[in-house]
Amino acid sequence: MGLSVQKERVNKIVLAYSGGLDTSVILKWLQETYNCPVVAYSADIGQNEDWKGLRQKAIDTGASEVVIRDLKEEFVRDFVFPMFRADAIYEGSYLLGTSIARPLIAKEQIRIARKLNADAVSHGATGKGNDQVRFELSFMALAPDIKIIAPWRIWDLNSRQRLMDFARAHGIPVSATRKRPYSMDANLLHISYEGGTLEDPWIEPPEDMFVWTKAPEQAPDRVSYIEIDFEQGNPVAIDGERLSPARFLSRLNSIGADNGIGRVDLVENRFVGMKSRGVYETPGGTILRIAHMALETITLDREVMHLRDSLIPRYSELIYYGFWFSPERELIQKLFDESQVDVSGRVRLKIYKGSCQVVGRRAEKSLYRPDFATFEEDEVYRQRDAEGFIRLQGLRLKIRSMLGGEKI
Image 1: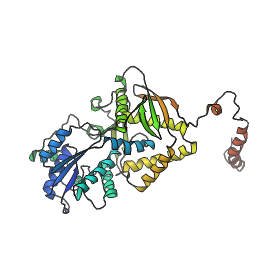
Image 2 (image 1 turned 90 degrees about the vertical axis):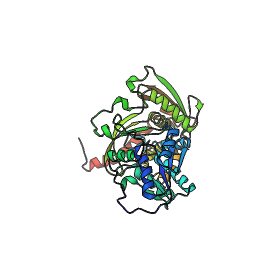
Image 3 (image 1 turned 30 degrees about the horizontal axis):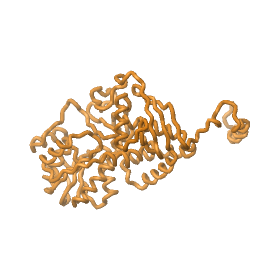
Image 4 (image 1 turned 120 degrees about the horizontal axis):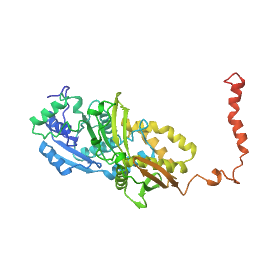
């Protein structure tokens, strides 16, 4: 079970450790391969883990130290909310729940490595997925001198059976089972499901797979109304109750999950070049994006909104591909954040069996003016002015037609 490439000399490694089969095997494999201390690091970003059990498992597997960080507030405040200020969405459906977590996990991993004088970091991402790119681009941006070890790209434990055999041989508890034949990733923003039975894009995900949201048909047979307050693009309160970023998202998650909101089944284009089917639960995030965009309709200038909208696909790609710490993402973020200065107000939502409908929006600095928009008689808009406006807009079309363009 050796390295397939020449290994570097390493003094101490900080491993991003989840406690699952892969990272448990990696923890032991790193110790044996590099003959150095391995620190097991886990980030609490809202995945409801048994942290006491995880700590004990890491110690039993041989970790020289176990570091668990509560990053929930930082995750939502400094990563999720900036992303939602930009209305980010990848390929029209994916709200980037896994993508946005990776740069924070990597950032804290580097902090720990610096504090503990480790000269290497490691992760459990495979050589086929996006996460290897996200982690390593973040490492490079934050600590260009750090050594990066990606076991999946260099070892010969290249099957689930080999992993389990290694685990049993080293006394590592094996909890992998065929009852849930797919991989899961969870945080305060979403839960994702990939692989296994989901690799056939024709097969509907089994209902017992979902652990967060109710099926829309099983949601309550009653309409719920909620109101969300925003300040400069950031949500701050639900039904008038101000909440911290993590508590806000947690509360909104409960509302969305209970009402069957946030399930998405899609086939996405991975950065490495292949298509992959993913199923996601993002209850609070789904509601939040709808509410935020509704408030923007009355607070953003038309041309500012259209310019911003043209950059959303590029911004979303940067997050999906792992370029959170890139200069271009930071530049676009500044533009988006400047657009949010007047995005303060309240949005009212009607929620029922998987649907979330905007039924009200108001803002102190609203650009919506009933006296201009009314169909009734008014004194602020001269309708005859529209004739000259239309004539100028159509001038080039008339000239093209006169020169032999399309006619009827």
